[in-house]
Each structure stands twice: as structure tokens, then as C-alpha cells.
Image 1 (cartoon, helix red, strand yellow):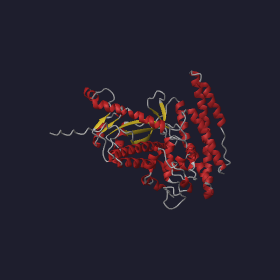
Image 2: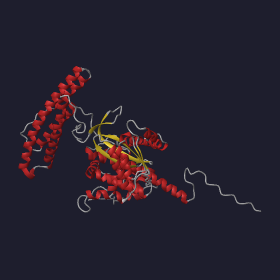
Image 3: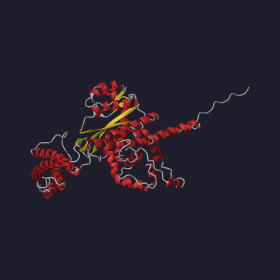
Image 4: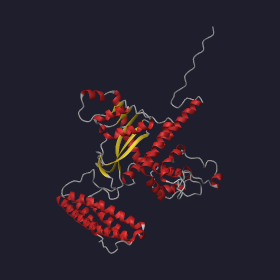
Length: 490
């Protein structure tokens, strides 16, 4: 059952000394911004309005997730800090004497509601900014980045060792559930670990003999993985028959173990095929290459960085305005081209605010002939994208113009915006698996970032309005004009 707000008010709050109910300025601004029923509507379809166990208050969940991404905290640390701080508890609308929600509760709601709910929250936040007239879309800039997945650097030998360990663990779970207990499977984890450690010793030599030794050891690991896959297949077949015979007597834990084993075998078969292709001298296609057993959507992406020539994760696009508010973002699987991403982003922005931006700028990666044509059809008056390759004399003259160069210089700030998201809002690495998990994670980071920006813009606007109402000059407006001199009497 959906619970929107915390109905409990304890007696302790009435005896607090003066000043204890005051929030820090930043939390007070965000609290006032999030106190809107529009942020509860996206969760209505995931919970019943009348039946079931009551959920935690959604207002508490939203504010706790804002604190998590604002200060880059883990779930356990977040719950501990909220429980230890009076101001954070009041910000999360948790009454004195009440305990904050359990970390697993926060994680379950995040995974259950998914990326569509977070996208609806971001749209509601931008609509609220537009209603308060603080969302400027006269010019926007776009850039792409890589959001790394929560995986280690993938190697063929490393993936094979993890596959052997995963299959062994899942078969043990199936046996413990009472299914196919007489179908044996040999534990090859020690043999795989010994060969993996020998690879590390050979890599220090860095010569042709070392490469041959690494290839030989990888082939041995592939043989071990193939044997484990064959035995795990027999366990899966017999366990599935046993579960079908038992009918409803089989526990949910047993069925979950069977589903996990089947998924692991499908991914393991692909990992084994990739290893055989590498041993044969080929290279698996990066668009479909599996780099993780628990995150099947992560892909190798080259962005030309010196420190990290190849990154493993998802490609994301960020579109922001002159105030630094992110007006659109998206996350994609693999190294999709930049050009086709720009027009859909501007279309979504136009549908949100009702008009297209006057100017759109991006880097050379977006330079395609049809991009400027599509943006002009949407109503964009000026598109500033430097052309790749050798430009004509007319094009060079156009790109050397003052207005063009001014927008190009402003566009470079999008790299700083992405760096800010990575350093302060969790975009450096997604801790949720799959494309839906990565989209949810990045969307929560954008929600936290925009709530911080928009709340400050609304406060600045109210301050200027109050100063104008009282007849005081706003900050930076300069001295008031001098009154006209009265004419001298004759």
C-alpha cells in the first residue's frame, strides 16, 4: 500500500529547544522544492492504494535518496547518518524516536520502480522549474561520456575463473534445495585459481614465451570451464525434471536457483566462445562482447582518453542550459554514434517546454549532414557544430565568425558539467546492473543535481522579487539613478 507522507508526529518534537527545527539553507530549499504531490504520482502504479503492507513514506524515500547522491553515500552509511543527525532526520520527515528505513528497503524500492519512475520524477522537476519561470532554454549544449559499470577489468582468463566459481556455487544451491542431489559436479575452483595465479607470474616476463604460456594456460582454463558447463547442464536438466515432478512442493528458493543457473550457463557459453575466438587469433565484436557475468549490458567503449583508452560500461548524453540545469539525459548500451542522439533530445525538450531552443551547440562528434537539417525542422534557429574533416572556404569563414566561436567556447563547459556529475553525483560508476539499472542510477544523480540547482534559482528569484517589492536595488544592479534637478525659481 502506498504511503505518501509520514503521518506520525511524536511528543518529542513539541519540546525541542528553539532553533532545533531549523534546517540548513540548502536542505531547506530542497525540502520546499520536493514538497509537491507531483513527485508522488509516478510511484502510484507500483503500489496499491488500499491493499498490502504499507510502504515507507515516499517523501522520506525521495529525500534519503537525494542525500545519498548529494553526498555519495552507501545505503548503510546513509541510514546511519540519518539516524544520527536531527537535521537530516527532519529533512527526511522522520519523527524523533522513529528509526530510518532499512537499507534493503531503499534498494528494493529503487529496483522495483525502475528507470521509468525516475524519468517521470525528472520531468516533474523540470515542469516545476518551468512553472516558476527559472528554466531557460534559449540555448543548450550537448556532450557524451561513459558511465562505467561495476566490473573489474575483463580478461578471458578472469571471466573463465569467475564462471567456474559461479557455476559451482549455483549447483551447490540447487543441491541444497533437494534437487538433483545425486547428479555430481566436480569443484574446479582450486585448479582454476592456481592457473590464474600462474598467469600473473608469466605476465611479468613480457616476451614471446610469456605470451605463449598465457595462451596455453587460458586454453586449460577454457577446458575446465567447458567441463563445468557440461556437468552443470546435467544438473540443470535433472533438477528441472525433479522440480516439475514435485509441483508446488518445490520452494521459491529452488526455482530461483534454477533460473540463476540457467542464466549463468547462457552467459558462460558466450564467454567460452569468446575465449576460443581469442585463442584462434580473432577478436570478438565489441558491440556484442560480454565483459561481465552479472552485468550483461556493459560494453567496451573507446572515448580516446589517455589514461583509459577503453572503458567498460554505458554511453550517456547530457544536455544542459546556461544555468547548468540538465534539461535532458539518456543512457545507451554500447558505443552508439553521437549524431543520432541529439535530435531526439531536442525533441523531448521541445515537448516538455513547448518550444525549441534558439541555439544548440555540440562537439565534432555530432557533425553529420542530417543533424543540422533535423534541428532546423524542429525550429532551432542556430546550430553550432564544428565540421569534421576538411572544410570548404565558406564553411571556414562561417566557423571563424564571432557568434560561432562564442558558442563553441561556451560548449566546452559541458565537459565541466559531466566532470561535476562524476565527482559529486555518482556518474563515475553505476552500482546497479543492466541498462535499466544504469538508467535509474544516472537519473537519480540528475534528479539530485537539478533539485540543487533549481531550488537555488527559485530562491534567487524570490530574493530579487522581494528586493524589488521593497524598493531596494537587486544585487549587481549598481547605484539607483539620480533624480532630475528641479528648475530654479525665477
